[in-house]
Image 1 (tube, rainbow, N blue to C red):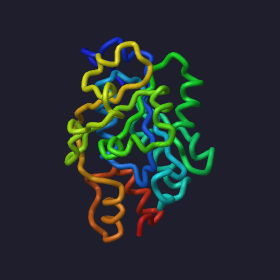
Image 2 (cartoon, rainbow, N blue to C red):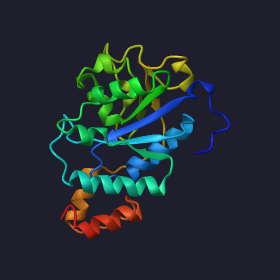
Image 3 (cartoon, rainbow, N blue to C red):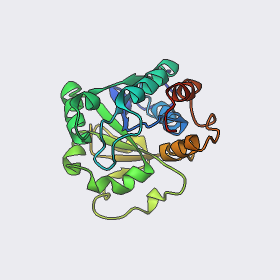
Image 4 (tube, rainbow, N blue to C red):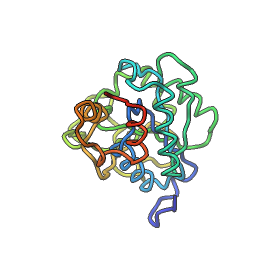
Length: 219
């Protein structure tokens, strides 16, 4: 990914990490992540599929199927890199455990964990959240219908920022709110569309849609 001309040096030696069920991965995941990575001058975005997210039931597609869809995305977008540690670990996928490992592997890097605005609202309930914030920054892609600027409460105080320069030299601890082009669709809505034979090609990479059809997923 080429460096943007106005990128700030504070995001050198930085890694973007995007975790989720990705059931299926769609352009509502891909496009904002690519755009935010450019804003932060990130050279790579790690896609980290969850085995079983703590706040969700098991995925509809199995691990192998979700993994193949992610591999296809990485082929189409070389800025993405696949990380399977949560699938290998089995059990529930706690972000805290994964970020402990990332921090041990990248001691001096800024770690940016990508989430959507809907996840931001539940962030205070995440497992070991205060310790997790000592390991990484969170980057929030604003989503239509979520007024993240209206957040209050002690958890968010001193952590929310809207400018990458506010991060300074800190390796962790901030929640950065960024604008990006949004596609107002969710994996749940896509599964519902597929189940009722509603066209989804505007929301999925062609490779993803082809794979879903071949595997007869979400029917």
